[in-house]
Image (cartoon, rainbow over all chains, first blue to last red; front, side):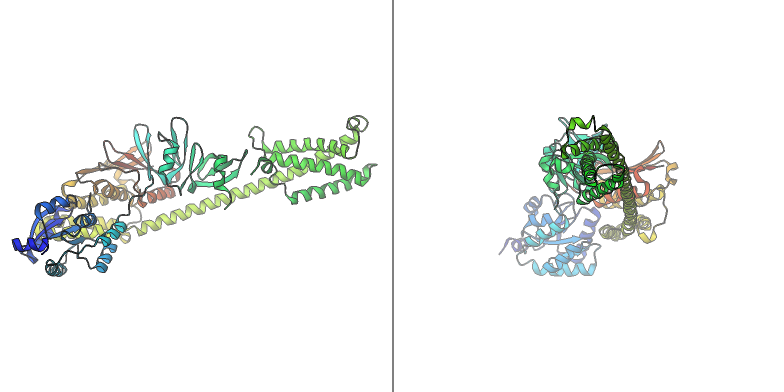
Length: 261
Length: 342
């Protein structure tokens, strides 16, 4: 006999946890469940998916209702943390991908706003399933998590630069080029420029190499903003930018980047 | 890419042939005026022609800013004519020192002819190049105009396609569904906010021109809904002088900033955050800002299409006279401001 059914046998009632960041929607699900499934005990409510282990330790619930979109730890991450220790029903307002994946993976889910009949079907299914071991749908959760919140890119997307007494947040797409001297690095955009302390070497390691190319010991250019490249003296080349008067020197070591492809 | 190759850039077979033909023609034109044979004149002409051509090409490719390019080219032709004349003398086996005494008049004529013909040719070339440059500039301006027009169209299209997020709509309706049972007046209030929001947000319902006041109403309705949904997690204030509410303001930009503040500032934050919308006029400029006290922007998370879209539209509407600026809020969070000419 596995642990879940042991708990049911012990208390004779099924215990559930509701996780949703919206307090009214937690209350709503609780009221609906109370009507449809009087034997169900909601033992705990939480506004996000954090501390799943603590909740399982304290309440040993047989069932989790997890909203997919929650701050901090979302429903998919929480399901992964639960890892088959309890049954899971996902709750979502509208997620094309999720609903599609749930249908395919035969995972229990309910849509908000709740449809009483649909919720009754889910309840009926859950009652049948509670006796058996909860399925472990690790791979489904994994792939969904990837699709719903693609991991933040590894590259720098924003540059923080002091302008007067304020810290300006500059999206990297707006940046034409970076150019450094011994002390500072100039961040030049179509609308002006700012100074940062991060040296070219460090920037280079963090910027997207598909967009930002080093063209000189002291210069990184946004290739999307290049208007033209001209050959120059002494094996160098010269870059003109769109919407900007300044030209940039490509030093000999980097000229090969612009050789005809 | 070696320097000598780049100095002689433009020295084409065509240019070489053109100079050859020109020299042949010049020698033919003056052959009656001299005792010299045609071949003798042709050698002089070719020497002067080729030397000038080489120097002219190099002068054109020389990367220097001190002297105008055209002046360098004329100088190249003058020096070329002189050196070419000397070269002709050497080729014909004459004593170079003699050339500047007994044969001075002949030398002067050869040089003069070289300079004369050369200058005419140079003038022609310079004019042609200038014409080509003008043509390129016109084409570039045209391309830029096309790009701008395309941007305006795209921005308009994006605006048309900007729609009410289903996720937002259904979550709000789920809240209304609950409130109808537990707090009917509360449900009515949320519905009223939702209706006000939808009137402004649905493309079919949008009015062609809008002002700051109307955009604020929409943002307020949106925030009121979120306040009900998020409970104590969201707090907001609107600080906009009455006089500024009648000012024209581009549609859907303020709401975009407010949505960002909720989505990236308040939503990921488990504690209470606040949003303040502020508008001020300063020196003929209208500045509308949305400040949140959320987690702020992490350097490696995406900035969102919304902001890029606002930038594009501002550029299409006002050129370089309008800006979207993002700054850190103290002690935490983000301030996003749109500045347009008042």
